[in-house]
Amino acid sequence: MRLTSKGRYAVRAMLDLTFHSNGNPVRLQEISTRQAISLHYLEQLFRKLRTGRVVKSVRGPGGGYVLARSMDEITVRDILECVGENINPARDIMGLPSSGVEVKPAAEGEATRIDTTEFRLTKNFFENLGVLMQEYLTTTTLGDLSRKAREINATETGSFAASTTNAAIEATSNETASIIRPALGEINQ
Image: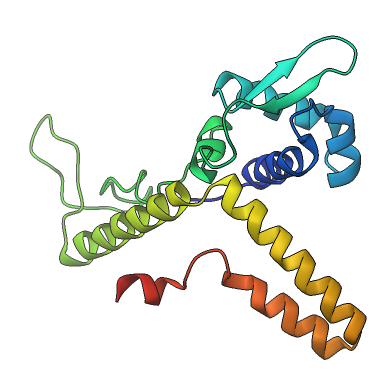
C-alpha cells in the first residue's frame, strides 16, 4: 500500500469542503486557494468523488460542491476508494518469484509459486495489517476529523494566548499525532 498525494489531497479537500460549506456550495477555486492544490487536480479528484457519490455538484451562479451525505456518514475509506487509492497492503502479495531469480520449475502448466514459512507469515502479517487499516479508515468519518480540528483550534488559540514558546507549540503538535483514534497497541488489547 502506498497512500499517494491523490488520497491525501482528496481528504484535505473534503475536509475543507466540510469546514466551509455550511450547507452552501463551495467552489473548487476557493478550496484550491486555501489548500494550495492545483485547480486542475481538484477538478479531476472531484469528478471521481462525484462519481463515487461522496459530493454533489451544484450548477449556476453560486454553484460549487456540497457533501452528498452527512459528514458523519462519509468515511475516510469512502474518499480514498473514490479516488482509486490502494488501501490494502496485501493486495499484491501473490507468491511469485522476483524477476531474475531462478527457482525449481513448477509442474507442467502451473505457475511457479513461493510457499515458504516466511512467505506465509509475512503474507498473514500484511493481511492482518490490512484488516486493521480497513477498520480504522471505515470508522473514521469527516465528522470525526471536523470535530477534532475544532478542538485543536480551540486548544491552540488558548495555548498561543498564554504562551508562544516553541515548547508549547511542540506539545500541541505532539498531542495531535494520535488524538482521532487510540494508538494501535491500545486497539489490540
